[in-house]
Length: 64
Length: 250
Image (cartoon, rainbow over all chains, first blue to last red):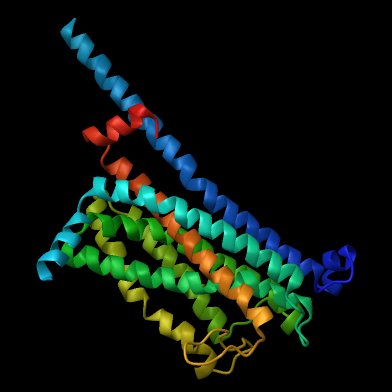
């Protein structure tokens, strides 16, 4: 460990604001990018499902 | 040999082949990315010794350098993909350009932001208009240009080609970023990692940094494949295999 105590770790010997600001924003960016494609995939799958349903309905109406 | 290469190259023309292959690569990239980044951050934040001049603010390096390296190499990768797209009209290369741009832009933003936060306690200012910082800001705008061009045309193929040209032309900026710290007087310190020399810092400092860089590369690989798969799904939505996939629940 590079620090004597946990409070020293948090304060980063005076540089706490800068270090934690950088890591906070960094973590937010990394997590946002990590989640975004998963949400997009769900959206695309929903759209395709809707499209399939629409086509099936149209087919049934034509047959009726 | 040539025949083999051709066969290998042709496989990349098949979206379904890509979809199946990438599915087997992604868990590896994800696992290595998480393992490296968690190890690197804990090591860098709590165990690496503090810098004798900069104190603990130097710990920002473990985000700043990987993000900056990624921002530049993603752009070069994008230019290569753009070249392949222009010359061989490979759909997948076009998708790679489109998928890589926003990730690269985010990495570039992260490098600039962490750099500013690091600059305040080290240089006494958040920002200076010097060569390294300005050329990095231009890189961010070049990413925006690639993204904008991709969406600026009603025809996706034309947009893809325009974005590819932008990516290739934009690589002029990469050597400028790289050598900016040597060509001009700048506040920015020289590169941490060089291919020909040992790092100037002790191993307890650069080993976690190297781990973070590897983690960031795998993170990017994972995100790139994920985004490309989304694009494939969207563009191939009329095909039987994508519909089958959606029906089964992806």
